[in-house]
Image (tube, rainbow, N blue to C red; front, side, top):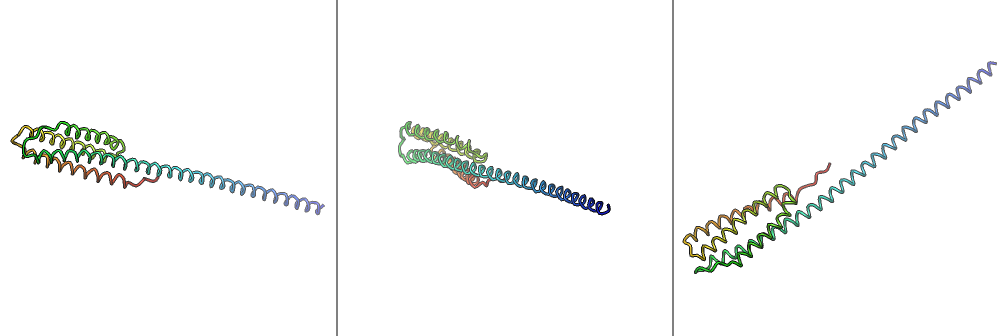
Length: 199
């Protein structure tokens, strides 16, 4: 009977050991499976983060290219209007006798300026704020310069006495225009050199 009892205890011990081993193995497998699932979720999140970062970088490149194109188009349009305005000023200033007011040349300058203003609207949209602000200032100063040259041409055609003072005023307005242009170029360079914020 003792041998039966010993055998029963042995079988029971073996069964308990096997059961305990199975429970421990099941828990270990559950932990391993949970760890694998967490790792899979972490990899998927990292992949999504990478995709989002790549999309942000692509958008940033696209935005920079659009900004650069808008800035360049605006500066070229302003340069064309400025050349025509300067040419009119030089022509009138060089005339020794009163010249008739050149309506067509002034209309051409206005047209070039209006085109530059329209192109400038895209710069205002593309931004950023500092570029938009300096663009508006440049347009304002150039508008004053165009008006001053127009007034000078009219005064010259009418043989006004204050032509020298008007020339000096045009020179001063021209300096403010050039300063505004430099400010815009500086702001545009900063905007184009901006580094994407990575989160």
